[in-house]
Length: 510
Image 1: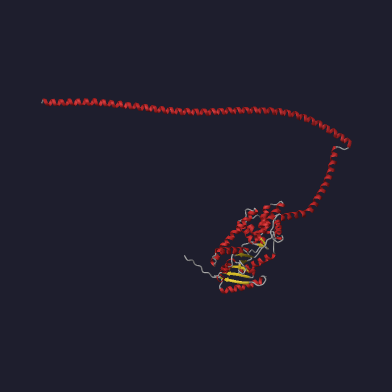
Image 2 (image 1 turned 90 degrees about the horizontal axis):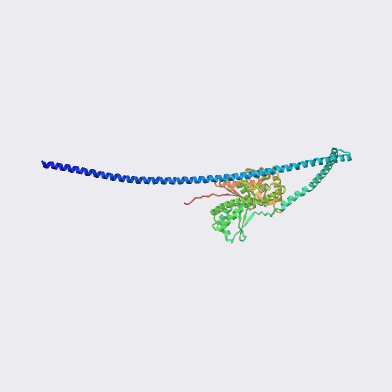
């Protein structure tokens, strides 16, 4: 029993000791933790104070810098104001000085004007005294003397003026014709002219006569294909190293010459190749026509022409008027018009433009019923040329009334260019017109696709569509054309009409 009591007492004592030990240990640990926390708090506080102090110093520096800048600006503004005040002060002093000078000058001028007025009064008194003396000596008053002098001068002036007018009129009558001739002669002299020669054949030179056989082809198929494609008669005879191309149309001859040159150079000569080359050459000639028109307008300094008018001007290179090359005639007329307009005080650019365009009606794409002057005027109006230029084109053969001063200038210069020696040959123009009429007559029949007048108009080849006319109708067509030519046209010798009907079948191997 005592042992149990002792054990319980020991346990209680051990528990108390343990409690006291734990209590004091935890208290010391708490004190250590609090002390550590206070130390950290003190460090954080010091760091925050340093950061705040640093920010404060930075902000203070920025504010001081801004204040310094503002002070500098204020100082600059004050300096500018001081300079302006100084300049204003100087200007005020200058204005004051000028004002003083002006007042002194005005006072001096007033004094001089007073002296002048005084002298003027004295002069008037002297003039009045002299007038009174003259009136006393002559027995006439000043007004009466003035009237008599004026009447005398009037009569003398009228007599001299009438005499001068009569002299001028007589001189003008005597020199008018002479001056007009001088202007025309100077205009002609200042334009260089060349004698134009128009042929209806072109000679194509070849390297050797073996080429002739290749051009003719088997049974003549190559030469027939070339003549059918170009409308040109190809004469292959015994002339050494030469083939003659005969056609009245220079465009056709040029196409045939270029096509023949390409075929001979290439060496491949057969009907299909001939048609291909001829089509390509036609395109090249059309491009050359446009290029020629452009070069002509550039050379003459004429701008703003419609592209179609430029093409028509290019076509003039391959046309002739009574044997005279039409493009050369148009250029010559344009230069003559410009010179004559300058001599007469008119606009030379407009005159040159009208002179270049005056014969555009001679190169139509189709056959018009109007005369070439009126047709040319219609073309010019269609392509927005000015009214005075259109009138000059239409009136240069008196087929419409002249309404501008350009019209007589174009008419005269056209006559000068065409009438000079060697310029024209009437027979060539009549020959070309007859061949054109032959072709147009045949084209008027239905089913005809192409017509070519060859051998100087002694043969007319008519190509018809195989799907429109049969073999029997070709014979009938040939007879009808021959009869119509016989009834309606005048021509030397006889005309052979050949109607060609060709059937082709084309397919492609793919």
